[in-house]
View 1 (tube, rainbow, N blue to C red):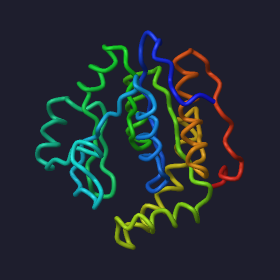
View 2 (cartoon, helix red, strand yellow):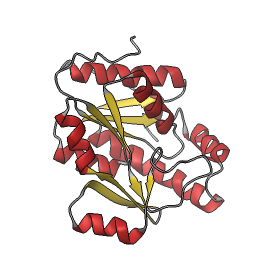
View 3 (cartoon, rainbow, N blue to C red):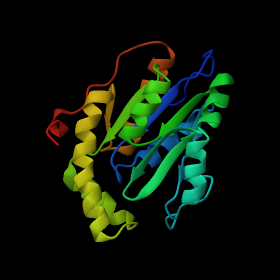
Length: 210
């Protein structure tokens, strides 16, 4: 499995990467972008406060709620959603600029936003990151230490619904049990999509009932 995406592709694609909180999708996305010079990460806007290790402009662009809602009214967002009382959204102009330059763009967004992105870009590559099991997800959320116990519980409750919804909208399911393997699978999916291939890795059946 190659670790670099072929830069000879004529045009890029929108690549949607989603998954429940704590599944490790941010780590996977950052590593894919590091290894692939022709793939950009779209930095989402959010109204929530930054976490301890988060940087404005790298992880998110942290803005006020009035500013966010003004962008909605001006039609500047490709997609947006409210999650646990905070707003998240994707600036459309940055995505279109990258595509016009022949580059691919990764959107790290939730399932609701992913559906909106798919409606705007029908050829978008849809990738959902799954945890090995619910216990592993709970442990990752706990280690992250970003949320209160109540918020963590809400995230775990929401994860089951998000996973169930993803089976209806996402063509590619990747289990993040071994990080390096998961990164390789995501790169392979992107390579196949850029070559016009429709094949996707089969997910592990053990998460099918979550």
